[in-house]
Image (cartoon, rainbow, N blue to C red; front, side):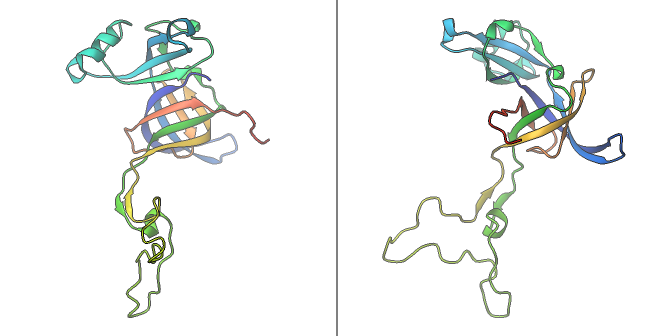
Length: 213
């Protein structure tokens, strides 16, 4: 259990290592995040901290949320997220968490909301094969059989069909931090992460317990 950071996906680019090899990276504006609540085993039954990210105008938040943020003298923050940790006493209200909690070469997990793609068919959504393309088949992209007739006489729940694709919470695990820009709070993470540019992401150190070497 460790602290992560909320950030904004800025987009993708590439950088070159010392050998001249191109490395595709995603640039993340990581924080800064403000500690808005400290939970301990004595007061809440478990140890955790709550952080806030992305300052907005006070009128964009409800009065209860503004009152909660006022306890830590934090500005109006759009997003709140809780991280369970072993010892919350190491943190204090109003403390800033920045990109320097990560280092180059560190393995992280990145969670975000995938790009919504609207209504999609089975071929695109579930990677189904298509039907014959010859003239007269009338079964080019049809779903095919979805169950037996009399028994069970219904369609089983969870049957893969056409439907809404994307726009769901996705976590990409075990990505490598290539570079940390502490002055601008930027993380350069190898590979792609969920969401489109401007999307909210959550970057946490990867849980490598039991990882195969």
